[in-house]
Length: 137
Image (cartoon, rainbow, N blue to C red; front, side):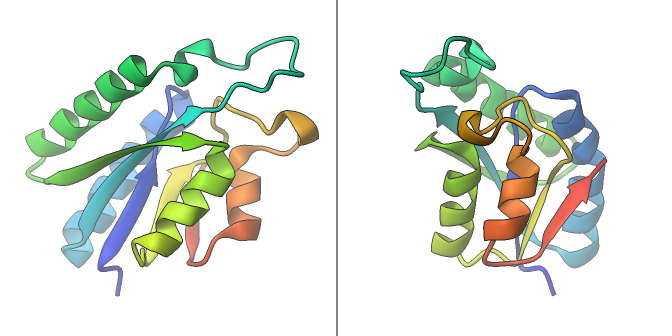
């Protein structure tokens, strides 16, 4: 049913809480797991950065490898991807590009689309995704 699961992550508490759900689904469906983190493109018009760490390629690389190690301890091999761009759009582009069957993510990531600050990344992914999205509260 879910051959490929995309798990976008950032440094948020919600992303950390979604890990258990991703583990359960990958084990239940024997899915391929792809971990994605997006290096956010700086918004030159923004006065305040939501999370400056998410704009550091090195910090993102460390986050991805830590998550990969965490999944490996549970017997799950995970592919890691780092992309640059606006998180919601990049997540959906990767899901489409890799023919992902399911996106599993936390309910509210650190990054917000600064043009629509009331709308979370998760909300935008739900509206733009080419596949089902499971949001973990």
